[in-house]
Length: 212
Figure (cartoon, rainbow, N blue to C red):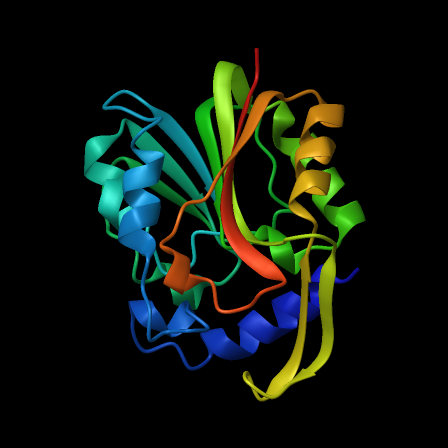
């Protein structure tokens, strides 16, 4: 399971978490206000949200008072200590693999997380949580994707100074995966300013997929 490598990486990071920004790998930039504003294009005051990979709440804390309620799933309690204590936020400290619910949501959001899973794991996650999207609801995914092909990093990262796994799947492949699972009207948005994309072979995109 490739995601075990990513979990090990973030577990070590969680031991040194001092503030909300600690979870960010490139902590010189914080684009989570763009993320929050983007989500709110598709959610309103009554919306229920299942947020997978909530981290320190950089997005959740910006939208919780504008929606109905949020279930925030994040494996590491040290990260979720920074999430606002609010009656309309339920924090669940479990991995995506272990977490399950029969509840259906208007939106399932997965931001900055899916590249820590390989393709097979991604298929399993999208399939698993398909049932948690209401009819007429949507899943919104954002992270880096490969521009023309899959880009996999698996080994020692000089930038992070530790072993690291990430798979930036070809954006067209990710769209195809979602369509095969049953999502409809899948479309891709170039979510960030051009200067936010540091590499030529990967690019930040948001994917919005509907369940009809």
